[in-house]
Amino acid sequence: MAFVKTAEEIAAIEQVLARPRFTDARRAYLNFLTTQEFVEAVLPPGLLAGPQPMVTVTVGQFGSNCVGDFAGATISIPARFGKVDAAYVLTMFMSTDHAIIFGRDLFGEPKKQAEIELKTVGNQLRGTVDRMGTRLIDLSLSLGEDSGPARSQAATFNIKAQPSVDGNGLEADAVLTLAEFDNDVRLNRTAQGTLILAGTVHDPLHEIPIQEIVAAGYIEGDLNAKARAIGTIPATDFAPYAHGRLDYWPALDTSGQPAKEAAE
Image 1 (cartoon, rainbow, N blue to C red):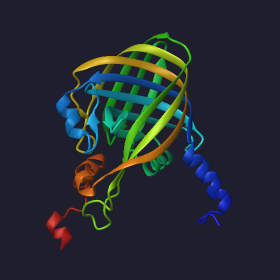
Image 2: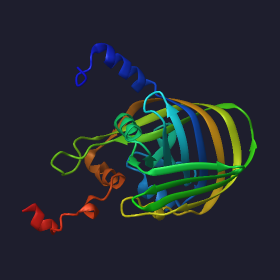
Image 3: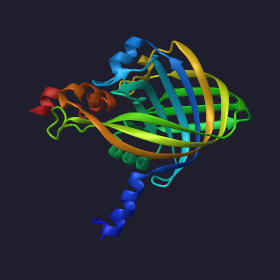
Image 4: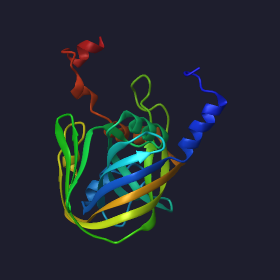
């Protein structure tokens, strides 16, 4: 029965959940310095700021063994939890519901659906993210030389949290997760880049101060991922951050009724 999986089907599902693989990835990235005040304001309780107030913006296209082909974009900040250093994912955008559901439910990634493009013409590359009629990210790169194949590791902090069913607070304490990636890089080109961030009430990217662009580049390759839970954050402490990761629901009111009247 399709609505109830067999033991064999569950084994196949869990094998993919435990070892997702993202193939033929094409990723443009840009790192810039922001302010220490901004970093400290957006990092949740328990996470400490990294050595520099840095922000990384990535726009890419991917194949996979789990969610088909998709495009995605990420904004992240270096952080530390205990002795673990990783990038805290501030927000993410995906082009398909498969990619949203998989990463949000498994890793706790703060994903939203958007229109994402990554186009290359000669040595010029442009990555864009459009959502609800606003171009949130506009990344342009002039590509340089390829430094050749390499292997590298990376890690991200994400947080799994659910609003309470009655609408007040969170259902339970938030779970801090660590996703670890083994990268098999085939192409690694340096770049000079520019970045424009815009925002809305739902996606306030315009509030991220851009102080100085530090580095940019373009890579192609495959990623193997795995994740685990490494801590918790009390529900009351994380609630402001949890709501900040979602859309601002009052701005989507099309009922035509004042909030007090609708509640009666």
